[in-house]
Image: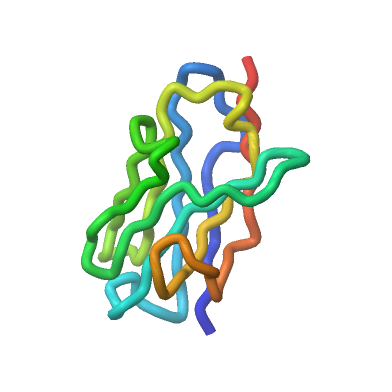
Length: 120
């Protein structure tokens, strides 16, 4: 059973960089052919796919967020990380990490989500 757990600060100031880590257990992030995604849901809105890192280490980003987003991984810890720069209050959301079998598909495993609020 694959389990994902998000961690990181719940409050970030505007213009700073949001950084979240997803720790995966029950499976390796290098296993063919999975994609490890970051997805968010702002209050009152739908889910937004942000980007993913593949089993190979290749990265994929939403065009609307590409200029501000970076996803990396630490295979020794079986973790992958999201960094979102120059945040504004519009980046306030519940952030999820998830496992998918294609890029921006329908993930089969999700973390519980973590609330991140952008406020001074």
